[in-house]
Length: 336
Image 1 (cartoon, helix red, strand yellow):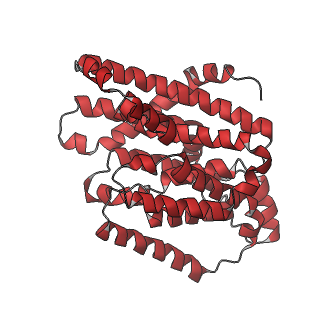
Image 2 (cartoon, rainbow, N blue to C red):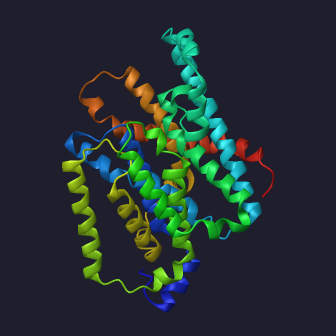
Image 3 (tube, rainbow, N blue to C red):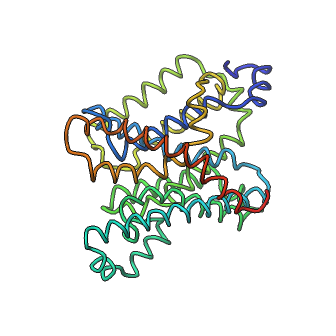
């Protein structure tokens, strides 16, 4: 059903947005593909396409955080801090065991300095402290920082987080990314977190206008082809080593725009299930699965299709977590 008339708008506002669920599941799939490539040249090319995923997750958090109560912000912050702490503790143990097994523990302990802690607290980068497998947890730290800002500046947060602020931060992010060799300075809460979180809030704020907007088929095709063409140009002239591309902003925004307008166009039960219950845990656990897979798997034909094994194992472990561990973590939180 398309939300293009008054009756459809009312219905869409009252029903679950399964299209957002579908794209959230795709974003989850895409993030894993960034850390272990899909087979062949397509896997290399898809790295640019897949960059929409983290911004999409940030926008999703912002979208569902618009106009929520202070108590709701506080609860989400506590929930995120608990999840972040548990994830960091897990990867600290993984890193410790690996250092012991490789007999590098003493050397590593001696090499830790204040800059590693600065990277962790200022730039949400845990890599130098607890190993490269923990790198994706920067997202959890970034979201925790954003919810902290939301709580501290609650009365003024919506006024301070305008579209103009988001655009300004994104321009700075692009400038920093294209002029530095280190991702620390732009892959953090301020430059790859907050701008997209704000965009998500803007989508929620202007939801009625988005639903009522008359978007012709010609414009839809123009937007889609324009983004596809931009991705091809980036692939040819920029390569795949960047975290943030111009197409990242356009593709994540276009996908979100489409999902808001067409909330029930895609309704696939398994994707709904992944999005609602397992996406976050797949994001957290997949670097560990990749670490183990790369450590024990010989470089053969099966290895080249390792993405599918890694995603499946991450999914199965997420199911186990949901049933066995998550209830204990939730019980540690005060009632909402």
